[in-house]
Amino acid sequence: MSEKTLFQKIADGDIPSDMVYEDDQCIAFRDIQPQAPVHILIVPRKPIPSLRDLVEEDKELMGHLFLCAARIAEEEGLSDGYRTVFNCGEHGQQTVPHVHLHLIGGRQLRWPPG
Ligand code: AMP
Image (cartoon, rainbow, N blue to C red; front, side):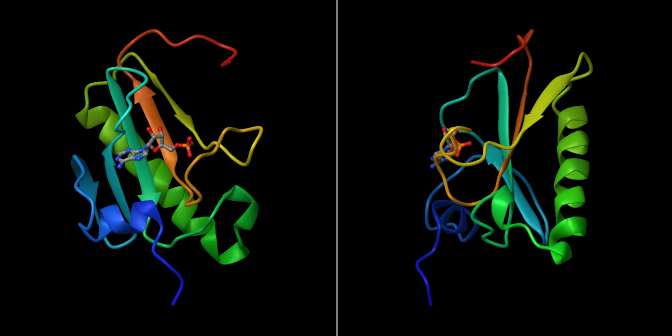
């Protein structure tokens, strides 16, 4: 069996985290280096390395991540809006090779990002 990803270790409780939500398909926890007052990562339990690796059968799972993000945003009181981001690959500055949706909010965000 291949080694667990960092986020699988978090899902399994091997590494501590500030978990805000979990179900049978995904987990959500606070980013260790928050870029805004609210910065939460929504991560599928399935260790898909990046968006490039998605397959047809992942469609529902990916939709589930966005639904969870919207619900969590509401619970976090982000009524003025927020941003959801998947970083992908080197130019996208993805650092953890396990697909994750960033939910960022709680302050005025700028566009374009750096
Ligand atoms: P990315 O750069 O898009 O791959 O995002 C990875 C994110 O994981 C970064 O925002 C990191 O701050 C975050 N991160 C790394 N290790 C941990 C950890 N142990 N707990 C919570 N967040 C983490």
